Length: 390
Image 1 (cartoon, helix red, strand yellow):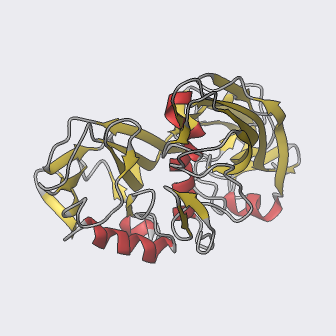
Image 2 (cartoon, rainbow, N blue to C red; image 1 turned 45 degrees about the horizontal axis):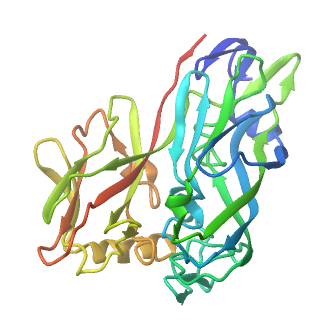
């Protein structure tokens, strides 16, 4: 061993008889996958469900599956889905651990976008889904094994029962190779919960007359964790000194021309790995603006007084760069603009928020673009220090 045994304080909890030795840990550990929510019916749209993790191993992530149906009855009215269907059925998913509230706090669609950015081998090319009445095969963020049941922005939906089966990955750790941000769960002192705020009916459907759309949904959740090896009564753990954050925020009050949006929650000890955003525009139900030249002008990020390291002449140029990095057209149907500081070299490109203060990004809307109550929803992915001691 290269470290002596003692009581380590990791991410706010005491880990007794622990030796911090990443090399030995990764040599001896074994990946574990086990369910902690099995086909539990959700409480209903517009409500919140809270699930507690099992206190086992070192938790790296959660595979979440939603299986259900939408029963549409018309009664002389009409039914249509909004652009929030299907992935923003999860209006907000939140993970809290050991006094750190909302380590993960974002919608289902933002989780799908992050998955596409973080996994090198993942892509959605050729996966056909219906969006706004068209068959879309690039940029859906969908997997071939998923079923939406109903198309996104689908109109004139007939009375029937429509089955859906969709999947999400919740990244507790930043990645499953280094386990940066993973949570030590194998102690009674660990308090690790997953909460899901379910979208309301008006978030997902546009109904007229006496029409109804009744959603039922069974939740399945499996933990991806790693076993904790022992040596002579001492447990061996990796470096768990950091937390991983994935936090969504929303800003309004936008107008034609340049809009600088400051990233909230900045501070010393935080490393910014990526951020990504959408503009939702129009009268309700709103739709995301795709990254095309008629919707956006230049795209850039800056810090300090006016330091501007990267500028794209148009947001479509940013879209090209994202597709090159992620093998998915994130800026297409869902309209994501993405600034990634980790895809090529996290060590070289990630941003130290202690040195680069007042981080912000610019969203430019051409004067000819019609804006109605526009809002930018953006997600920051960070690694930040937890409580560590001995």
